[in-house]
Image 1 (cartoon, one colour):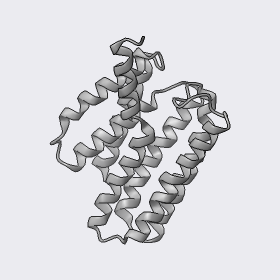
Image 2: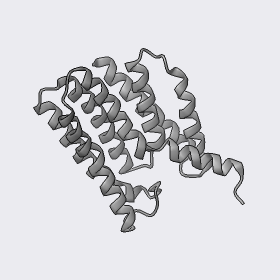
Image 3: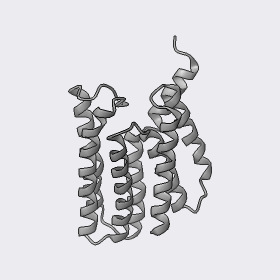
Image 4: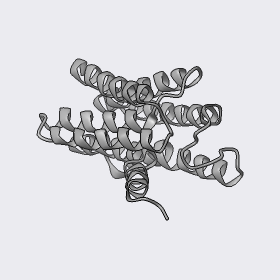
Length: 192
């Protein structure tokens, strides 16, 4: 029988998962774009390119056992998915640029640069994407909303604990993921 800590760590890892949070980050960015008067057709296409296509690729790789498990614990198995996702995000970034939505394009470019940095690190070392994605999302929310939701960082702490507790990452990997994600989005949005 599983211990309560095991169950709690699994729930935290599944609920605060990059598979859900990356689309949520894009939705937040798009929410701000709606305020600029973007049409929903464009936003639907952007979400399809940036979210749906990478998710289909992820589930296809999982189904065909090209990745061992949902968490993609093998660093080498992460690389094809990350590279494909970066190509899709580049397509979304290009689309935003082409329709003249420069503010959205800049936000997507910040996310794209962060993604590229994580892909490059993953070529050599297993950094925590869970911690990084949560840090990006929480920092983005706080920067968009004048730090009204600073307490969300407690969720980041839970995610970091869960990933280490489940032995998916070391403390160095989760701290590096969180610091890099939060720091890069903070610097990027400050420049914006």
